[in-house]
Every structure is written in C-alpha cells, then in structure tokens.
Length: 460
Image 1 (cartoon, one colour):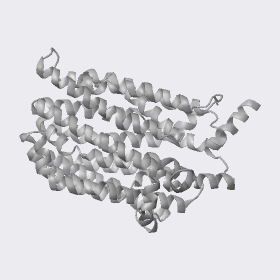
Image 2 (tube, rainbow, N blue to C red; image 1 turned 135 degrees about the vertical axis):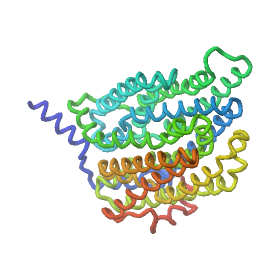
Image 3 (cartoon, rainbow, N blue to C red; image 1 turned 90 degrees about the horizontal axis):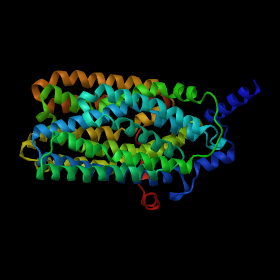
Image 4 (spheres, rainbow, N blue to C red; image 1 turned 45 degrees about the vertical axis):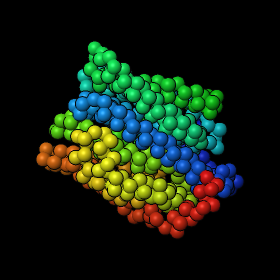
C-alpha cells in the first residue's frame, strides 16, 4: 500500500509540478535568441518553417514528376492512395505525440520520472490501431498498408523528442530527410517504369518508393529519443494518466487528419481520378501553410503548455501574437505569389492541369485568412480545452462534407475547394472566438510588432 501511495504521488507530480520562483525564472528566460522564451521559439520555429519550405518544394516536385510522367488517371490513383494512407495514419496516431509532449514538459522539474512508461503507453495503442487500419484498407492501399504502423511509430517517437526540447530530430528527419528521400525514390521509380514497364501497376511501384523512407525515419527517431530518455523506474498507472488526458484530443486529431485529406478522396469518389489529380496539383501548396503552422506550433507548444499551466497569461499572449505575426510575414508572400502565378505554375504539371486556376485562387485567399488567425487550436488545447477543440473540428468537418456533397458533382475540383474553404474558415473562427471570450487572447496586439524587430530575428 505504501508503494502504491508513493507511485500515485509521483504520477501527480508529473501533472502538477510546483514551480518555485527560481524555476519560473528559468522557464521564462532560457538560453537562446535574446535569452527569452520568444527568442527560443523563434529559433525553433524558423527551423520548422525552413523544413516546411523544403517539404513543400519536394512534394511539389514529386507531384510534377508523377503528373508529367504518367497519365492523369495513374497520377490521380497514386495521389489518392497516398492521401488515404496519410489520413489513416493520422487517425491511428490517436494524438499520442501531443499527449507525450504535455506530460514530458510537465515532468521536467521532477526528473522525468516514469516517462518511459508514458512513451510505451502512447506507442502501443497507435501501433495496434495502425495495424487494424492497414488490414481494413488493404484493398484500397495495397502495398502502402504495411507502412501505416511505421508511419505512426515514427511520428510518436519524434513528438517525444520535442517534449525533451529537441527540435532538430523533427526538422532533420521529418522536414528534410523524408520528403527528399521520397522525391528521389519516386523519381527513380518513374524513370525505371518509363524505361522498362514492370508487371505491377505503375501506382503500386510509386507507392512503394513513397513509403520506403518512413522505415529510415523510424530507426533514426528511435536513436534520437534514446539519447534523451533517462533511466527511470516504471510508475503504475501511466497508461491511464496519458489516455485520460489524451482521449478527447485523440478523437479531435483523427477528425483533423480526415479534414486535411478527405477532400482528395471525396473528389476521386465523386469526380473520378482525373479531377482528383487536378485538385491535388492545384492544392499542393496548401502544405506550405499547414507545415509552417506546424513548424511554429512544435516549437511553441511546450512553452504554451507551461505558461498556461502556471497561469502566465501574459507570456501565453506574447507567444500567440508573436507566432501569428511570423506566420503572416512568412506565408502571405507565398499565397499572393501563388495566386498571381497560378496560370503558369499549374501548367508545369501538364496542359490538363490549367483548369485548376480557380482552385488555386480559393486556396490562396482561404489560407491567408486562416494564417491571420494564428495557431488558435494549439493555444486552445494547450489551455486544456480538448473537448472544445473536438467540437470545433466536428463542426468544421461536417460543414466540409455537406458542402462537398453539394458542390463536387456539379463543379468538380472547384466544388471541393469551396467545401474545404468553408470548413477551414469555420475551423479557425470557432477557437478564435473561444480564446477571446475565455482569456481575452487575440492574434494581433502589442506583441506583434515587437516580434518582427530585426534584433529578434537576428538572434534567432
């Protein structure tokens, strides 16, 4: 009984670590750019955004290789299969990565006691879910199905390294190595298929080339985490603690994964693979905004959790407004340029893809509005409102599906773009209103201009 009591007290310490004045000072002023939390987030965020640019360019080049080498039908089948695989992996992750970040950050001052148990508790259910999803979707995914557990495990382990404050593994492995290796392998497969046709369909060989780099990322992510993971005894109840916190967010993350990829799959079902290929090509730059937001969020999330847990509302406001300003400055030129150059950019994929210009215009306008809202959902979940985040996502997905069903049969790819736009605007407007009502937080304010000073960027 005494041992159980000690274990319970240790688990409680992981989620309610008292912070002395000295610890608060260290948390608010860290080494890095200018010695401040914002400076450190700037450095990590810029690395994440740089990786997002590499990823976006590699994915753009990959789509261009596929669309210019193969017919619209083959390209559409390949892009639909990869979108379905990413959607399934996103659901199977169960948002365990963000749950691990939450517990690892809070366990820092307790010596990370019991953290290895939390990591196992986050990893095993995701692997089981990915295996089940692979078996269920094998008729649609083919050789991509076995890659789902590998994709999930790599993502969870990389998230755990971010909980220890290490952004480099995520930036290097997920942001640079993975998209670059996918581009090189898919290009090689396309060249070999053109030179010597193989027995299997082209999209199968392309899928194998696209999935192979995830195995390397998994091995390297496990090695990176091992370097940070301390040797601590297992604490009973860690699985219950993790999933009690993460369960609402797991549903929300699953819906988010569906929201990100559902449009391509719906277009393929309702409009055919040719329309899916046009839509996927025209919206390829959507990943710029998503990954830029993700890069900054990965750097800011641990500090937002700490600030809101300590009641440091002003520090949370500073982080939110600074990251919003950076997102606008970094991504708006991309969206404006894409809107202006869309007629020429889309023809790089082939003459058949010029009809996607209206889709590109809808995408650019929507992403500019969404970016101006900042990473509202990250702030909302960092404050502990996972149920509210889930409700927002359910509402956004329902709106997207309703608009897609109404618009795609008549307007094809443009109808899908309008449906996605409606869901995206709703997904950002709801948490924006909730943050303002509960905490008085706004995406722009007195910290916005301060975040853009030359000194902050130079230090970062």
